[in-house]
Length: 591
Ligand SMILES: *[C@@H]1O[C@H](CO)[C@@H](O)[C@H](O)[C@H]1NC(C)=O
Ligand SMILES: *[C@@H]1O[C@H](CO)[C@@H](O)[C@H](O)[C@H]1NC(C)=O
Ligand SMILES: *[C@@H]1O[C@H](CO)[C@@H](O)[C@H](O)[C@H]1NC(C)=O
Ligand SMILES: *[C@@H]1O[C@H](CO)[C@@H](O)[C@H](O)[C@H]1NC(C)=O
Ligand SMILES: *[C@@H]1O[C@H](CO)[C@@H](O)[C@H](O)[C@H]1NC(C)=O
Ligand SMILES: *[C@@H]1O[C@H](CO)[C@@H](O)[C@H](O)[C@H]1NC(C)=O
Ligand SMILES: *[C@@H]1O[C@H](CO)[C@@H](O)[C@H](O)[C@H]1NC(C)=O
Ligand SMILES: [Cu+2]
Image (tube, rainbow, N blue to C red):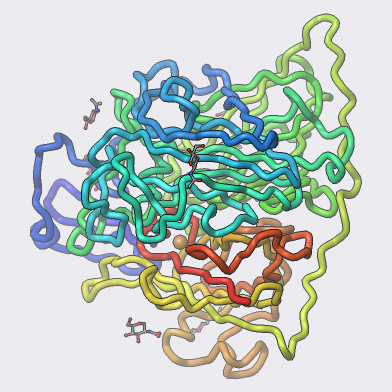
């Protein structure tokens, strides 16, 4: 959603952007009539106009690497959600967070990295130890949310990218509180991940209905890595040369607390909900603008964009360096891609090699960001200069006697996937992305195919079948669409003239170049953000994006569990503020 209301001193509200065109003034009082202006909680924090974070010196704090837990042993691992404080920068007081860990003492942002081995099932028991009677980042009770009758902070954990039974998938209505209350789709706190899938970088994070944005911003996220020795190319950077990087943005108060808006930009409809949370501080592994000392060697970085709403276009300040991308959400690419930049939507993972071996000791290389926010149209207010840098790499001399291993960039990593289907019998689904506004043009939320989360399930694929999903984006923004359970392939995308479409002057039922067609081009190949096996993909505005989905594991074999049983799966937008209101739909597998 792109509408931003600015509170200004004259008591007026400017609607500064709406589909990039409309500029209107509304009475401040009119807007205020919809909610109580209470000062009980001190300062108000306005959606899209948060007080700037204190100025911090970038690159002074070292990158931290989350602790790892081996989940391949078959022994159940217990992961709790705790309320903790953690310093996000050495010049700031500690920040209150919710975080995963095996104890309150060890809980951290990111949570521990769970290290799994292919074909060895992992058993993870999730517990909720959050003592609060409500979340410390305000809940908007006017959007559909967990709403536990006895209070508490509901949580439920989704393993993003997992081929897992649905009772271990973190169904949004499968939440539970520390007080023992559960959502209506709750099955168990004891999850089983079969890990039958190919090697890939996954991540786990909260998925509770209506407050995922709060819980993930509060800190409930961690890495989950599936390794498969027989499948992995030899001599990839490993050990200290393999580094997970979880990138997020946050806005902080001078006391270290997270600055989260309590006044929404459509207060008549939703007093607190803000269509996109953007912060002015970039964090990697929970550290604001960290640095990493690197030897003159190849490094492997597994990067996840774990931001609520901010897309990233990452680049390296040293022109002689490139990202050598070897993997996506769903595992290895068939061959490496040499890239100057990486655009990653929230939910995306990229697996890259960066070769520092030819740089002189003392070189500083910055990991920078240039993605507009919202993406792709952008408003400079949400990309202040502080968001243009993410972290620094400092090339240092290795200790005397330390031999840098000879790592290699693989030439190929497997066969080229082929999205084949029978065009006569394949199931095609046309699914729209639409923003809903009230009569005054204020955002109510956005929906998938004109259905809310609570509407009965409509996406009911047959196990083993192939479907083509045609996602038609009628909104002005790009949305990262995430489908649970499977990895899909991008087929093509095709731009259409939305002005002409909205005026009823043309149709999407006729293909380009038919004179009545709204399409302005023939189907186009994926851009680099859409290549490879994906579970989350950027769906561009005013385009139809077509995905090839085979409802089997990525390796094409049958599911080693019953995907039809349990509470079912979901598909949704991975801008968490959208997912919460109301860009999420159930997904039920059928035999
Ligand atoms: C944003 O809020 C500040 C006060 O926190 C105010 O001075 C400023 O005018 C606001 N900006 C806009 C564009 O509304
Ligand atoms: C879940 O795991 C706990 C801890 O191991 C165990 O005590 C409990 O019986 C398990 N519950 C179920 C339903 O399997
Ligand atoms: C931190 O400062 C903000 C803004 O003044 C305030 O709302 C919040 O309550 C403070 N948090 C703590 C823990 O003091
Ligand atoms: C990213 O790199 C590609 C290929 O080098 C280039 O065409 C594109 O303009 C770059 N994008 C940005 C945002 O830097
Ligand atoms: C990258 O970040 C560094 C450190 O903040 C900055 O000096 C440099 O100008 C940035 N480069 C670009 C192209 O933005
Ligand atoms: C969307 O749903 C609403 C009611 O939920 C209905 O009034 C409207 O006609 C639908 N729009 C489309 C394009 O189907
Ligand atoms: C889109 O359609 C409108 C008329 O509905 C026309 O004015 C405009 O030129 C078209 N744009 C493109 C890119 O074809
Ligand atoms: Cu969205």
